[in-house]
Length: 84
Image (cartoon, rainbow, N blue to C red; front, side, top):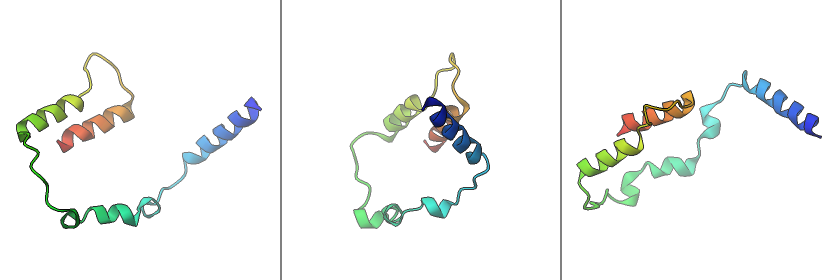
């Protein structure tokens, strides 16, 4: 049974290398409607200064320099930091 499962996983992994994803397959109309900001009202003032929010965002989006991370994890954190 282990061999059968491993074989299937290996086959799927090999097939994933050549698969071309279509962004349209991942889009969902419900999520697209969330972009309509006016539908849900204006952004509310939380009472927290923007400087404090940016500082917090930078701290939670920065990986420690003294450790190694998977390239995908690093890419995600770099994108989060850039968005701040």
